Image (cartoon, rainbow, N blue to C red):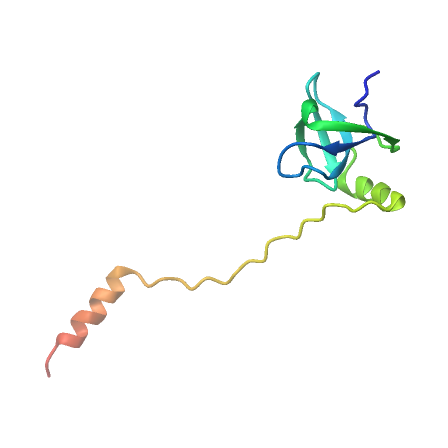
Amino acid sequence: MSIFDVGRLCMKIAGRDAGRTCVVVEQLDNTFVLVDGDTRRRKVNLKHLEPLPEMVELGSGASHEVVSREFKKLGLPVWETKPKQRVARVKAESKINKKEVKKGKKKKE
């Protein structure tokens, strides 16, 4: 039994998500765990986590939806990503078409 068992609430203390609350979703090996919650779902070194006294009931490898449901029960914020909006791109004309247009303009009648 480890301090960082599945369901353990933790605080990130290093990196871009430092200061955010997360939960251990899966134990990967002796030095890395998979976390989710108010952070991006990712593989994290145990040295970058500080365990909190609370535990959450989760199964190993729980989905983001399950984690967000548990965080909302506790009143904690959850990291929500929005899908990128596709921007309509204008296709560039090919160089061949441009050359033909230029040649056409130079013709004298």
